[in-house]
Structures are given as C-alpha cells and as structure tokens.
Length: 550
Image (tube, rainbow, N blue to C red; front, side, top):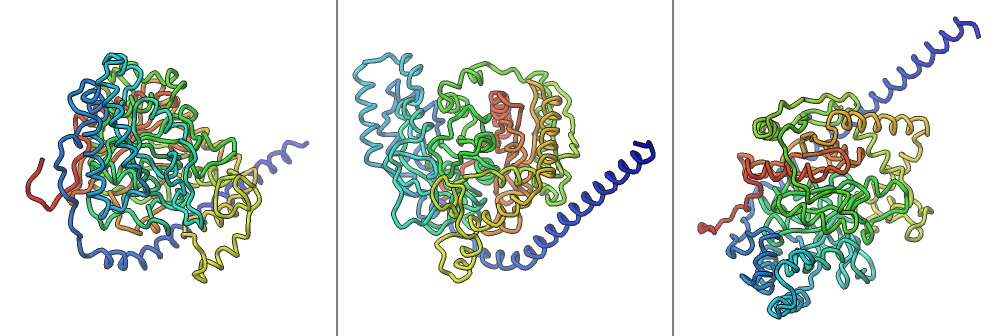
C-alpha cells in the first residue's frame, strides 16, 4: 500500500470517530435537555404536593435501641440483658414507626420471640463458655432485618411485585442462613420497589416508604424499606442488595452506613431478581446496612462465610500513610453540580483524613468518568436472563411483547409500575448497541479500573459523593435519576465501597459520602468509615415532635 493511501485511511477513520463522538455528545445533550424539560414541568407539582410537613416519628424511648449489634451480642451472652428483652424492644419500635414509614412488608414476631427465648435458655444452661459463644455465634440473640427481595423462609419474597399468588420463601437465602448460623434472628422483611428497579421505594403491592427525617421525602431505593427501618432505630443491622447504588443511596438519604462488598465474596443466592448471565455477580452484590460502622466488619465476616479469610477483615488497619484521593465532579453532561452542603461535607471529610492519617489528598479528574453512566447502564442492560416482568418463563431469554405491556399500562390495565416497564424498553435499546461500541465501553471501563488500581494500590481509598444532594422529595428521582453516576461507578469497576454519614444539612437531612478501595480491600473502606464516624458522629436519631429525649 502506498504511504499516502495509508495516511488517507487513518485520517478518514479519525474523522469518522470524531463525527461519531460528536453525535454521541449531541445525543447526551438532547437527553439532558429532555430530562430538564420534564423537571421544569414536574417540579412545581412535586413541591405543591409536599407543602405541608407531616408530624415526626415518636421519640426513641428504650436505650437498648441505641446499642450497636456487637454490643447487644456481648450483653446477651454475658447475661446483662436477655435476647427476649432486646427482641421485644425492636418489635415494639418497628410497630411504632410502621404506620408513618410503611417500611415492613412481612414479619415473624412470634417465631422471633420464641427463638430469642431459646437463646436465653441455652445461655443460662452454661453449655458453652462466653468465649465459645463469641467465637462460634458472634451475633447470638441479636435481631436483624432483611430486604424483602432476599429470601427468609416463611416470609414474603415477591420483590415488590403484585402477584396473583403471594410468593413465600421456601428456604433462607445463603446470607440469611449464615447470619442465622452466627446466632442472628430475622424478624422482618422490608419494602422494595418492584423487582428492585427504582431509586424510589414504591410499588403496587405494599405502597410507598417514607424517610424518617422528613416523611415527605424518599428513603431512596431499592433498599429504601431497610434503610428507613434502620435509621428509625427499628433494627440495628440488616441485609440489603446493590446493583447501581441500591444500598448506598438509601443509606445516604437516611444517614446510616451501607457497604457494597467486593464482588464474588458474598453469595447472591436467594435474591430476586437474579440472572444466569456470567457478568451478573460482578455487577450485583448482596450488601449490608447498619447504624454503626463498628458492626460492618463483623457482619461482613459472617456474610462472606468460607470466603471471609480472603478479605482479612480481622486484620487491624493502620490508616497512617494511606493513599487518599477524592472526586468532586465526574465531568458528565448528565450529572448536576454538587449541592453546596454536600460539597462542604465531602471537603471536611477529606481534610479530616488528611490530618488524622498524615497524608496529602489528591484530587482526581478522570476523563473517562464523564461516560460512566452510559457505560454502567449499558453493561447492566446488556445482561441476559435477568428476572423481569417480560420473561415468558422464569430464567428464560424469551420475552413477551414490550410494546403490548406499554399499551396495557397506558390503558390502566397493567399490574406493573413504570420502572420495570422502562427496563424493557431500555433493554431493547441497549441490545442494539453495536459490538464495536460495546467493546469500546468495556475498554473505557477497564481504563477507569486501571487508574484506580494505580492511584490507590492496596492501601488507598477514594472519596466520592454518594449523590448530588440530600434526600429528595417523593417522585423527584424520576427527573433526577441521571445523577446516580457517582453510585454506578463502583458497580461497573467492581470495587468495594461504603456509604458514610458525615453530618446534617441546615434542614436536618443526612449527608452521605462514599469511601471506595480496590477489590479485596473492604477492611480499608470500613476502617475509614469508623474514623469518619468518630470525627462526624455517624448516625443521628431522626427528629421527634416530643420534647423529651433519651
């Protein structure tokens, strides 16, 4: 080939790439404009619907509700308090807040009390020493809650679907059985949007869940029921799931800790929805939530089962000299600027870590992050055999007509909510993305992974916003969903990440930030969470109209 011909080919390819990139940017701008127009139209109505602030929750009266899970376990096995007393306290609190929050889907109060009584009888028998119980059953007698999409034997497991026949779990999910084996007692399952496909916890089966800090606001989704219950002191630790921030956004909106583990170390078996796609377990994780950072590592150690050793969760972490990076802006067209109070809280957290760890933080500006929403969404949507309303049979790749389901929806004949219907349409669009374009997205995602790998190493963390602003009013997420890019980053890059509460806004709403690290470094993000809790106070009890406080 003549050199000039080769040069012309290279120039032509570069020109085509430039045109394609320009068209892609135009499409993004158009989407942003459409969402902006929707926001302008919808926002006044959302505000009008929420002018009147409802009453706050009843105050927290029982001091047992304010203890950490690990502290409760210690007091139970040393007979300072009985498991039955603890269980009755959490059941009473759950019943107290349920009318206002609507966070519980199903319960096993009587069975849980019987199991608590059996625990107390076993402890009194002296069959095992305190040391043995601590080692073999570290959560003996401690109540825990579970997101309804995770199977708890005998309880609802519909994942927010309105089914003709209520689906009851025939057996526990793997994580539930592991926490039970460690002595924990499940007592409720909590609300989720239909098939966990929304950042607002609402469905046609059990309705909408409210935020404990302002009942007009959303606790986020899809683990919003779990977050609302935990934040209101109705539970102390819970099992959730994360497929795009589903545990971390609710944790941020309700001021608690939420941890997405390194993929592959916590079993996803027993969760609905699921998928047989080989990429599912890399993107999706059963997660954990709690009010206290000190409970995260012990709970994760139990949840990981035989894989726990690889995470070295019992290893003491020295934060001195760790690598510290942070991101304030991902540069995406879609993402709005950070709320000033969120930006200020993030900077305060970074400044504190600089001083306490004796390091200088590096502000990261990663060019590739501007496309992370598109990359993460396409990777997720291209997965096959994800449980959804369109499957002809569970686990099948064959689908019903998406168009016909939309017709039924607009004719008010559908039992489904809007988000799962939208999934069907977006899945069809994602499947039309060319293999070449998809390979470029995967390549871009790998470059982001490599940058984090190089910058953080095995002893470094990156601080990210959890969301652009604090808890949204109900329905606001429908025109602010493009701001979740900070969350989906760590599903796409397969990194462990912890949401940490770092203060409150002037309106009394929690502010959350994310601490992420390279795979297998869960203990590092959790150690930083513990440090931030010491510095900024961690979980703060929701407001109460009653004057007296605990």
